[in-house]
Each structure stands twice: as C-alpha cells, then as structure tokens.
Length: 201
Image 1 (cartoon, rainbow, N blue to C red):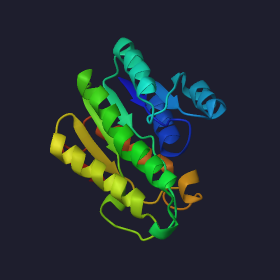
Image 2 (cartoon, rainbow, N blue to C red):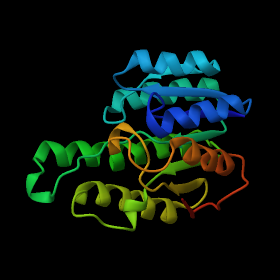
Image 3 (cartoon, helix red, strand yellow):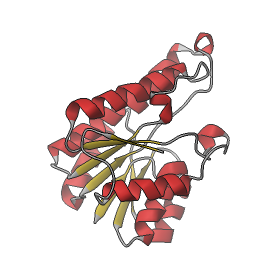
C-alpha cells in the first residue's frame, strides 16, 4: 500500500512513517523546514520526501500534483502546530498560524484526498478536540473543528484522537508516538475505525 504522511519528519508523523515502512508499505513524507530530519526518516525506510507547507496554496497544489502521479491509497493528514498559552497571551499571529495549519491547511489536504479519490484520509486530530484545556484554547478549537469536519464529510475521512504524546510539541511528555503510530497503521489498513468516525487513544 502507498501512504502519504504530512509532517513526517518529527513526532507522530515520523513514528507513523517508520511503522508503515516496517510493515512493507511505500511511504511519502512531507516536511516544511527540517529537511535533514526528513531525509533521516526517509533513509530508514526508503521513503519519498516532499517539501510542503499546508499554509501555502501553491505548495498544496504542487503536493497534489505529486500525489496524482504517485497514487497513494491513504493520506495521513498529520501536520500541525501548538501554542501552550492561555488565551490572553495569544497574539493574532499565533491564532492565525494555529488555525491556518491545523484547520484550514488540514481541510485543504483532505480536499486533495477527495479530489484524487484516495481511499482513506486519516485526520490526526487530538483528545483536546473533546477535552478542553485553558492552556490550549485555540489548539483545542482547531482540532475540534477537524473532528466535526471528519464526521460531517464521512467517507473517506476517519479521525484519530491521540492523547498527550511524547513529541517536541509536548516537551516529550505523554504516550509513546510508536503506540499512536500502531493505531494509525490499523486504521489505514481498515482494521479499526469507520468512515466519518473517530478512534480514541
């Protein structure tokens, strides 16, 4: 199976890419700024690497062209950002970056999946979509929007809701990213989850 993973150079995306690679699947990962880290992941599993920014429409169109030629069966819609701040500390730039990446960008990648008739689009959402935190108000809103979007669209969308996971975004606190990746692998292969539904961790 061919799987495209956005934000595949670090964290959950990296662990997911490695899990698919070890499973014998063909993998394409994207990165926005850390090319070195992306290439290190690619070297481990023989993955295809694409520089991609989900907040840039021209970059999304370029990625769509790559996917149209490569023909993946699954997109893992994973790229995301977080700001650990109470709402009064958020700048307009913080708000824009979170929403443009986690919601607008993710929805546009999902649209690419629908346009290309990709079999499964797995939206990596968050337990924060259902469990609000005063330290993550805009992040919670961005992920809750993606959860509702998944349910509203239905096929081919499924969302996975990890809890706090050991990545740069959480200062390496929480569950192991490999455990999250194992669930995403099950969802991608149709062994867990339903279209328009969610899988909680």
